Length: 440
Image 1 (cartoon, rainbow, N blue to C red):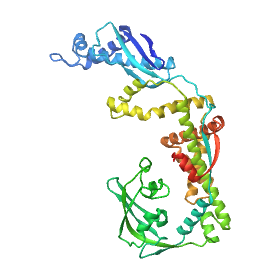
Image 2 (image 1 turned 45 degrees about the vertical axis):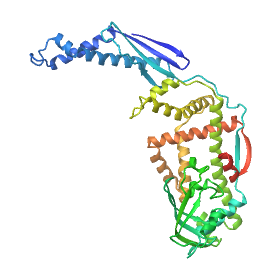
Image 3 (image 1 turned 120 degrees about the horizontal axis):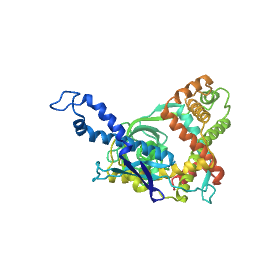
């Protein structure tokens, strides 16, 4: 058999396989001999059919099966021996006039190659690493929420400016139907005034435009998707189902111990310091995520290389349980191209920075994540035996291992990006960070 590569361009090639009789005749003959005792042809007893009749009846299909086996194996070994770094899998070129009786059978397979490119992690950029601080407004608001949460709800007959409302936001056209609890003071003044004096069962209609100080609160209270938040201007109904005032909980040692464990917080100052510490730790994770996304966008924009786009669109039509049309494949490629580009850039960055993921890395990351999750449910001091038991169960699930491995890679790459990309550091409040994150 003769196999060769024919280049179209840097990322597109064709593998050509020329198969001759010697490549498959022995296996075909073997299969014919195996078939003879089982062959049935009218006018002959089973097992007594002449060989030429067996060949006539079954030879073509056996030949095609054996040639396919030979070609598939040769193709696989050729890709391995040539160390081809493929995108997708080889696609057989269709040939409507293929002649199975020819002395030499020629098969052609299109392949898409991973492009050669370089990345510069230290290239000049405008990336900002945000240090998000919890300001007094945020901390005082959280203190009040704690007092309300652990205070006593006092049912009210009518809505006042200090009331908490439980009810349902609805808008049939936008598919909004969400039960929530919200303070009247959360609304803008014009909307809040509409609620004053209302009773259980009343329906208040408000506009989503400017309903809250931050439009992103629509995501929390109306369950509107992020893509629909900006500029949303529709009327929604709020059906009042409960009205409560609040007798705020006293900020005393019993409350502090209930929240944080015995003796860990002893005063209002300690409480505010703890809120600030916990909030800024959470903000740091969000800031790191934004930094990672900003670096990804920068690297995708600044790292230029060609992809075998047309090949990949054709390949997308052949994979998956549901075959895609050419139009559907076009849409799917457009949707996934950015992710594919960063996947290739990510692999290059890992190789350049000699990043490797070990089982110990994965185990340590999972242990940390489990402890954080347990702490959220009040288990602040789990035993090592409890934690490692959960870790073992999680890591026995291959889907979880894949998901966690991706997170470990992202964490390691983030550290590299922080060092190499040398982003500008900027200290901001949480409100300023949200504005920067969403371009507002």
